[in-house]
Amino acid sequence: MSPFSSGLPGLLQDAGLVLGLVMSLMIGSYLIRDNFLARLGQYVLIGAGLGYLAVLVWRNVLWPRLFAPLIADPVAWQSATGTELFTLWLPLLLGVLMWGGGLELLRLPPDRFKGRILLRLLAAVPAAILGGVILGVAVSGAVQGTLWPLLEAALQTSPAETAAASGGTAGTVQATWLVRLLTLVITGGVLIHLQYGPIAGEKESSSPPPRASSPVEADAGAGARPNLYRMLIGTSLRVWEGIGRRALWLAAGIIFARLVASRFSLALARLDYFLYEIPRTDLWQLLWATLRGGGS
Image (tube, rainbow, N blue to C red):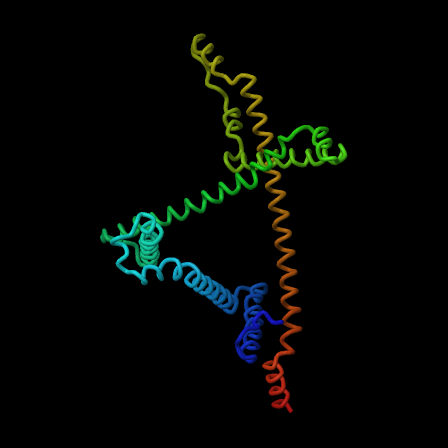
């Protein structure tokens, strides 16, 4: 069944299928060179996607949860409780501020109009709240759903005790425990690399220390030098960060290769679908009959 199958007449469904083929060819022409048709197809695709997303948000979120309750009782804010104010009127105010700030950014930069500068500053408040909520949910989800289960699985009991408790062989449990430990080490190394980058101690160690002008300063400088414990910690962190950096490179290469392979598979599947479905449509048969009749 065609993905355009709906309550529309068959001719409109066929027109949508042919239009999808034309848009795919327009965007695919970018592989040859950058041209007007490729840019037009991209603009139409992005515009249609954003419009569809806006309609979904309006029908499923904004209208039933925000505007419909406010329109049903417009003066409810006079006797509204704290919960109603935070769930209805505050989101409306923040949304209006964000929309106003977005429209203001499309205009020329503010010169001497303090009201326009104030609007941009106020629009930063809902944007900051939205970004903070998204980052908070993402970080807490990553910690609770990924890091903590990895740490808990890696710090389980010994392989022999785990094998006795689960009834499996010792070799299988050892392999599972080793995989968990490697996963924890690689994850920690990637986090260290993303947080601190290459360990900064390398640059400091490459520069020679300043010369002491007196024996007292020499003794003080010797006491301030890093001891064996600090050198061991720094070396361990550098090694751990290097493991994480190389693991990140490997993961990025694998993801890129899988992305390219999936895009080629999707393009071939799309082309096969068009070649199979379009000749069966009534619109295509009508056009083909018209062309054959005109040619004869």
